[in-house]
Length: 280
Length: 280
Image 1 (cartoon, rainbow over the protein chains, first blue to last red):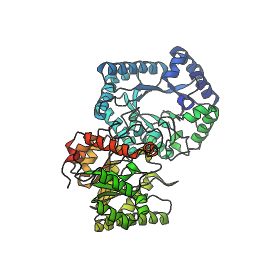
Image 2 (spheres, rainbow over the protein chains, first blue to last red; image 1 turned 45 degrees about the vertical axis):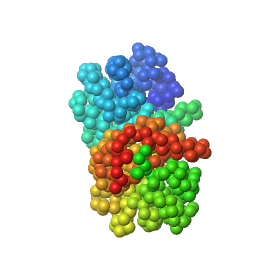
Image 3 (cartoon, rainbow over the protein chains, first blue to last red; image 1 turned 180 degrees about the horizontal axis):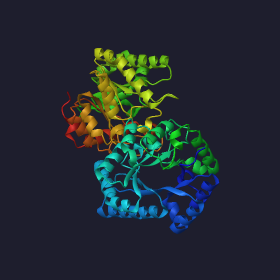
Image 4 (cartoon, rainbow over the protein chains, first blue to last red; image 1 turned 30 degrees about the horizontal axis):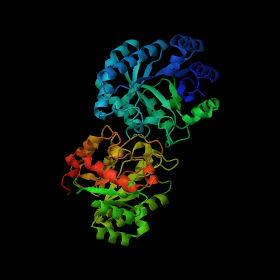
């Protein structure tokens, strides 16, 4: 198996600390990791940087900033300030992208206004992100998450925001779980092109509980991962590919080593040159 | 309250028989009802027609045909034949539209191929539908239902299919629950125009269980119903407006009379001329 572009999003094994996740990457020869801020805060930035360096691990992305829509100007400024701090941490860890979960509509705020708040928040940070060399990576989330996570639900919207802001520091995340259903997905991946700042893998079965953490193991659902990988490669993306399988049952079941081993085997079984082509 | 365009989709009170639902329409002065085929089969077509006529009720739509994607040619033909029978029943009841739930992808069939099967199935029935005076009304379902109900997830896809088939008998259903999240919803409602064959109301809160029957009471969620109603009116739709709130907890709780009364009060509270403008 060619692991050159493989990354472990640490929420795949969420109960583990960052130190444990780093050890797992070493154990499984995974060259990159996506770090979550709550886990980073537990370990501390300086210790985390040292541990990642000692392990020889790249950071594929930092998760996450965003949540821009808020009812008051003051709260909106706080969200931007928080995302600014995350950008600095991402730069410190050498992460090329900060994943943005854009946020739900606050009570009484229309979707249109909430979407405008997202765009305003990203625009406010674009030049700082460019200076830091970190991309603000808009991750459209599945439309079922609109009331609790993200008013940005399609690559089309993410591309439109990036077009309007017009900064090379604004990117998009292609997560198969969030985008596979979209009849425009191929066209929007092509339109995204060099803007693609991450490619995330899991699979889709109809969620039966929590809409956020009921993602299926790669290969257990209906997503044409190889097809989407080919589209992403055709768009020019050659960066890290994250295994990101948020699943509350796997977290609770306690055998995260088996969960990770299965994910790695399924990744290896995806028969597609698009996953293994040279990383740039 | 102006009830001229009000219709009760009978699955709002699913545990009731068709006879009970008809009685509820009389009791609450609801002039139209959306009939489901399983309930119609229980009562029998002839008796149902007579009961509806005696009650002076219009049938806003018959639910449902479709489920076109299937693994074999024989199954696909069966699905078309079944939808043909539903068309005949709709015509018999004087329903202007047969709602199409287009179906999920069969195992091993790509979304693109499944979508082509949907289009093929609808195209096969368009001239018969036109002769019967019943519209084949494509209902895009929320993308979270793609693996179990419908590969058609947006009004954009429904409009594209209708454009390609080019028959006046192909319509679309605008159900706020399924379309509110879509950043293209206003543009696609305008594009649909005279093709709109139904307008369905419920509300959105994040589902916590069954993705099909966890719809919120009108007014309890985040959908801008008045805004969508205005868009639908602007597109030219003047037909019936269905209250369709599929909620398994309400069905199980047993007080369907209270559930219906609340829905009617919430309908009346939607402050918008678009709901009450003249029915044509």
